[in-house]
Amino acid sequence: MKILLVHPHLDFYGGAELVINNFVSILQEKNHQCAIVTLSISKDFKEKLKGVKFFLPQNQYGFQIRGKSLISALGLIKEIFLLRNLIKKVYKDYDVINVHNFPTTWAAVGLSKPIIWMCNEPPDLWTNPNPNFLLKLIRFLGIKLDVFLVRNFIKKIVVADQNNADYFIKRYSLKPEIINYGIDYNFFSKAKADKKLIKKYDLDNKFVVIQVGVVTPQKNQLESLKAIKNLKDKIKKIKIILAGNDKTSYGEMLKNYVSENKINNHVCFTGQLSQEVIKNLYASSNVAVFPIKVQGGWLSPFEALSAGVPIIVYPTMGAASIISKNNLGVVSKDLSKNILTIFKNYNKLDFKRNLEKSQKWIRNNLTWEKFTEQMLNIFKEGVL
Image (cartoon, rainbow, N blue to C red; front, side, top):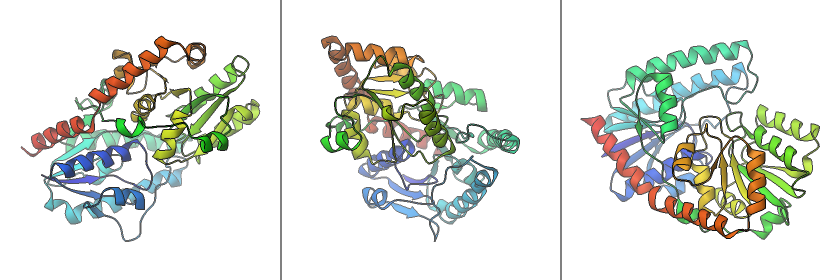
């Protein structure tokens, strides 16, 4: 099968980018022809997918966080037109168009090929914690238009879990297919505590909490910081690592919160990091927290578990239903209480055994081979 994948930016590694990397790698192994339309790409990403055709604009148009202001939000219009022009030049040579993150759904509408959406996250205004009236209006009108386009031009939609399916049905009144992502268990299970990282981020003899992900309201890092504030007198050497791009208005707000509450010694913002560093930071940590509201961050809790780190996730995040059903970690909105419980039980044998059971479940159930096989079935149904 000839598959044209479309993703707005591949110049850094987030969850959706990892999905594409692993998905395309397995597709190539199965002798399917893949090409990718994108506006920007890192040298590292391109090297990992040798043999894949990449269609980019003459001058790469790099990733920017949208929704901070009216001008940045309207910048999406340029992205849509650039992506659409690239798709229109090549799409006739492919059997299906597999779109990923917004605005690829809008860029591909109306073309005479089946469009399959891997809905990692429905579009929303997530990067501005306090949008003004104009941004709220753009968001409202944008969602109305988005619902119309998805209902009328996308042939099949895939989400990763039941929570995301419920959210999707509520917005679009359409029932998506559910296919769990895979996890690169072999990579994360080889994680090791790194002395250089421990020294760099001052983690020695600390009880380390970690949250991985772009610093945005949707990832909800403020709740993690509130938990650290609540616990700093109960766990004297507690420290949180916020590992992800923090160059956002929300990131600035969090840094002000840290200063105002005098918890600077308990908090570290790392900025964007490579997967290799993230892996070893997990292994240098004691617990990973994910107070995610609804969308995004699906892979991270399972990656943390694969690296041998217990997890606490909000019940609102997509992966929570899987984690709860299979007893893989703690599902709760009370971060402070559960971090303290893990701190008190960290060295108990039962605690370690439960963690090993969670790792075994991930290794056996969340594989990229299973994900790819099920996605190919969706592609075939879309072509019929």
